[in-house]
Length: 234
Image (tube, rainbow, N blue to C red; front, side, top):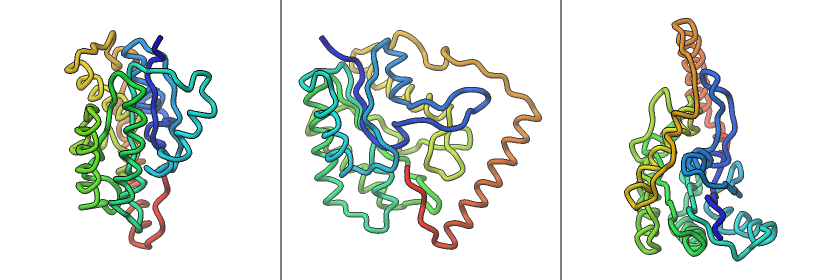
């Protein structure tokens, strides 16, 4: 027996947040599970880095799982945004912890997903650290046989919030669609399109309000960066 989709990561995978045109903000990994018609289990935590996955989240799995030896159809790992945005970024430590976490996921899953980080992450952008982290993610995926979900060019007003970090409700669905494309190419076809599970209606006034709200929040994020106020965690 397999238990569906198993997920680890930070708040991007944990999910939750404000509605977008009435669509709830749910985890991309949950949307992936729903599209595959599979159960979903997550140990993701807000503010997590690779060390938190390798340490606390895996420990939580071992302590809380009703079947610690269970296998899963899909394992999902998306972490690193908090690592690259930190002032004390340490590529060697990230590689050690990410490899440990991905190895754990791959051992328990028929297919493991390793997700890369958008290059335009953060205000100000995290810069070259993102490419360093993505190279680590891709190398670890090759060594473990994991599938890579490439988000390096992911972004845009509709899909990412004003902090240029957190996906919007539509962004989470878009990430799920990218994950489903990768799984389908490996032989695991989805049973439904996540976009078919939501409905919304946009209005001109609503778009104007949304654009004004986004502009205001973007201005706050830039001001925060100029004051060197620490970024809020994922």
